[in-house]
Length: 114
Image (tube, rainbow, N blue to C red):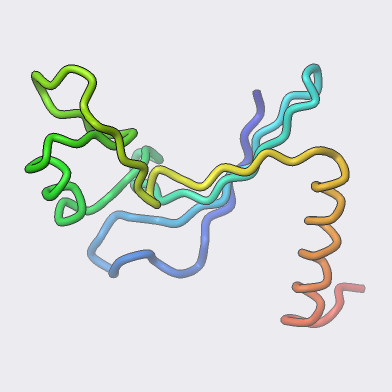
């Protein structure tokens, strides 16, 4: 399944942190599947990222997120962090509407491309 990534301009935390915000687009022609996601990833690895101070309370409580699971805890309670990502499935109509809205936003923010 193809995946395209667009990295954001602003850093989610601070300059010394390896976190980067990214928008991912995934699709599969055979199944008609399309998904767009916003995520927080590690700059070097591209893997889901959250700073340690966000993970510590989860560790103390024995709670798992999509990228951290406590050792020795079978079926831990699960919590989704914003860093795990927000995933949206769209059909053709939804994709077309998103494209129109993005073009309008781009044109109003930066001027129209000729």
